[in-house]
Length: 135
Image (cartoon, rainbow, N blue to C red; front, side, top):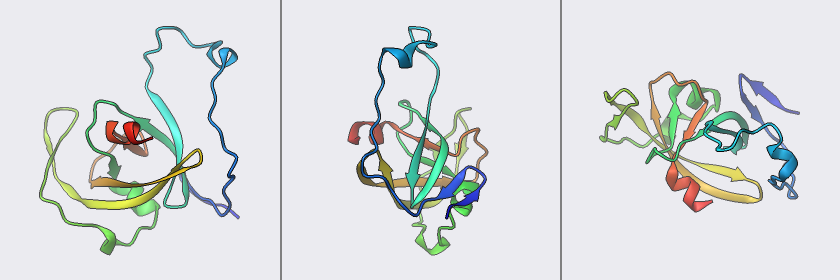
């Protein structure tokens, strides 16, 4: 049974044979050079999270507070941090804290740190370049 909360769904079974592949047919409607944002789905804390923006320009993984709440993570799992972030508009954004969560991509599990912020994003999560390199 799946629990659906907006774009976050709990998964009770995982397929060990998940593969991500792109072939020439995948590029049929893509204009080259490809400059659109890369938006994927990931399993985070045993929930399927859609609309995850891969941002190679970000040095941090960002989680809006609303996503933190939808994932039903206990507030006591947040670790306090005094480091503010610099937002897209150049303004300081104070973090609520950081949380470490299991992220599954294809057949690989990683523990990732997310900075939780009170901010509105068009995406459910923002994944930075550190994650890209680890994967």
